[in-house]
Length: 126
Image (cartoon, rainbow, N blue to C red; front, side, top):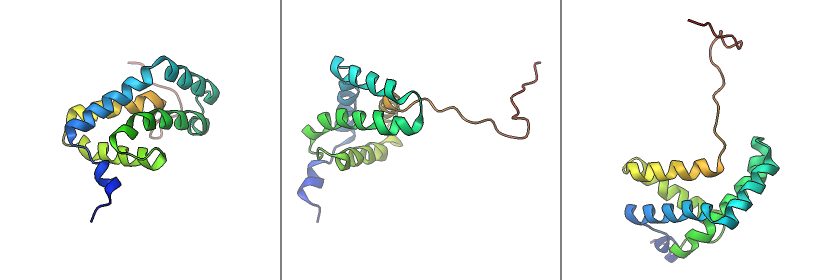
């Protein structure tokens, strides 16, 4: 037996696309863009500070949108939404694309460390 709140927070793939698009659009709203810029400035590209400053603002922006779709207005609601989206990513390339766009809004681009013994910083020119 599923609880009423779990049923309310269940979305079809089509509904998930709509909600993802709304969340992405919410990040573009002038007041939210300012909030995110301030959080990024405070974080100074430091991953620990990104978690401290940027992630809470991004979570709040998502909460403001997803609460209208039955998700709880807390971190747990955002996690449930993220898990739901993740469950659709493999089946639907549009959801995977929207999810990637959303993550790019609040996660810094990750640079992979060099691999192998020749990772001393020198690259042979050809």
